[in-house]
Amino acid sequence: MSNLRFPFLRAKLHQPLPAPSLVRRERLLKMFLDRPETTLVLLVASAGSGKTTLIVQWLEHLSYPVAWLSLDETDDDLVVFLSYLTAAIQSVFPEACSLTQKLIATPQPPPVGYLVTTLANELSDIGQPFALVLDDYHCLRQAAIHHFVSQLVRHAPANLRLVISSRFDPPLQLSRLAAQGRLVEIRAADLRFRLSEAQALLEQAAGVPLPTERIDAVVEEMEGWA
Image (cartoon, rainbow, N blue to C red; front, side, top):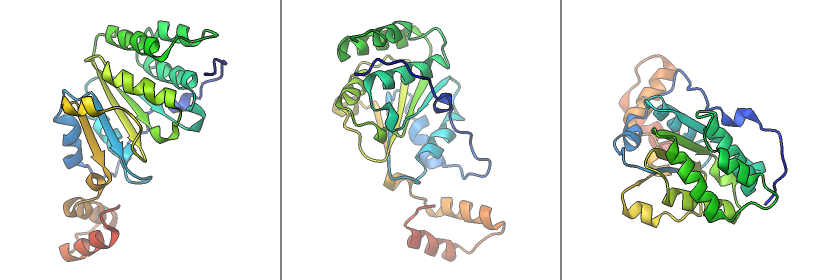
């Protein structure tokens, strides 16, 4: 693990702005909103399938704070990852995660289990519900990071809702979470447009009503992808 200090790219902590003309994915938003007991929402689909767009739409419905982190290949180091993760949380709660940051800044950071326990306790101390979004998680490949996230999900405090988007299934240990009914998974098949959604999108673009049979043909040809 690297413990070098580095400048933060602040843009990675800013959630994308919603586009004003997007079709509302009410069917999918219910998968977020109807399960308040959820600890983790996992979105897995290829690039351009609308994962980030859906998350941004969901955030508009929230009444509690959101910490956002857009990941890339430069974050594939446990200390770098945790530095950005704690910075994202501090962008919403400036006093949070101070002990975790001190631990990862030491010449020899403690074991993953110790870091998970420390961060989970500090997140619980925040004392109010919040969401943490990890966008483009597929950029991370280091086993230590996946172990850390798996353990954080396992020991997540009740006030945390974690959202992870990825182009492929992350190697996380989620079986216990799924068995407890605290995992929501949104896959490529869910993100494909249904007829009514495609109709709203195409008529919005065309500016006029379109025949249902033509929309149905487009949906079939494009296999539901916008």
